Image (cartoon, rainbow over all chains, first blue to last red; front, side):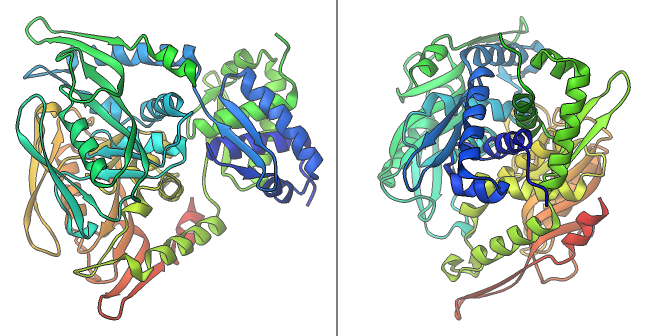
Length: 278
Length: 278
């Protein structure tokens, strides 16, 4: 078979890196796959690195040494985060989304693969610098954004259930109090779901008083896991004091005026600075 | 700013196509993004097309006319489907996965982003030729594979809930009978979740008698939706007659011998032929 030309190799390299975020791919992998010398692959990577910089697609890191290779870290630029969150806020603030009781219909937005992927990329960008072993969520609405976050961070997802299931084997079960309704609820997680002493990022779609997030944190304590951070898509402005504090929300919901048919949502202005730090 | 060179354009093109499967991207989009002439972009696309063919990454279709552009259809080759399913079957057949009651622990496999993405690509490959408006699943374990399938097909995901939720507005609720336990269960879906008269692909993790799949089909009837197909990861060998018939399973579970600590699972040999047709 004819050898791949440089432009074909760069194309294939970018495709492979895009499909394998946050994963070290060795030089050997590429020399074999492309039937090319290591020196050619090195030059290809230099070109790809400049390209990724220039188009603000993230970073390509090269790791030297025996286990050396290349890793693509797909972060979003401040500008694209701003644009996406502004659009997301505008969509969610559409008055046709108001549901009796002052709720907002948002599953179509959270279940859109493109939105879920973008939200996952933002969470990943926020926590990229930190060591994370698992992304953790509780069923159901946060699962699509959580699996996308896990994909970008290249770690497994753990889903806490509301009730113990026979297909999960022996489980750890906890009771927690919903922060806003004060109802006692339960959470269940299989003993096999994660290793003791892990570092986790909690991801969820919505936070009001933070009772569910606190419940997840308590569950993580049962596994001796450290919660590195909590990322939520929307947090309500009130109550100002949440039951957890190390959380970041992409959007803030100020108010749903059911009678006046108006929703006020604004993007988290601090987010650009947070992503800057990493 | 310096113009992108050909190898950079090919790299960027492949990255953009990888991130936007099954979506028509216009020539204008690329001429603006790359600040290049349409003739150059056309040549780039020819190169990318050959590359995708050669590496068996799927197909790049070009659409001519005013709304013309390029679309990347990421299918998996027969060989990579075979290899992946064999490995998946082997992992699931590990005797340490046996849970009292003859169940198999499989959430770690279903919640791994890489596995979920591969399973999504296989389902998408199977149904690629058909018109699909939504991917539909029921909470909870099938959600990661369903959102990945939806991502590859570039359509929204719909998640049926087990109970009506106040945040979903007015809902359609149905009762159905679990095929194996004969218990009456409920499903609930927001009226806003999908448009009437749509075509849907149902995706789930597991099928025994097919009661849940039939429940989902019944729910789809309530929305006048046509079920184009049903894709499940594992179906049990018995009962041979399921309550639905237009389903495809990636793996077949023959038996879980709890006492002997043995699981027999085999890949669907017909799958290669099914993907051949598309």
